[in-house]
Image (cartoon, rainbow, N blue to C red; front, side, top):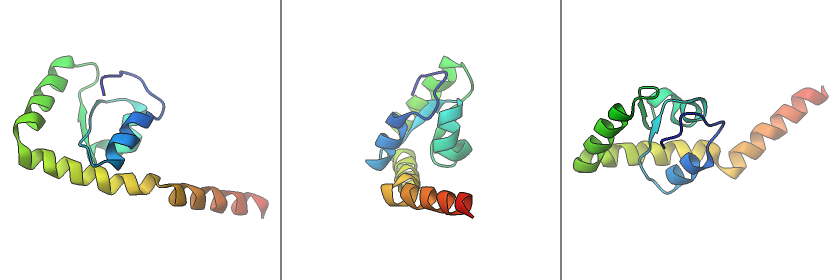
Length: 97
């Protein structure tokens, strides 16, 4: 993702749910989805050259691509409808006490 600013970009979550590896410029939304780089590749802020280098690495290395694809798929489960619904229900329960 080449955006330099995003709140919570749905495109990252959608890509991850299909097991696609994610590379993104470092921004707030990408930080959240990728958990600081644990579940996807973050580039240096506003550094297109860094994005290019990391994209090339991913394109030409099937093992690295597979690793990040698995990480992405694993993370996507944290944003499943049932998990998000349960989090909202716990929050509402806490607020009603």
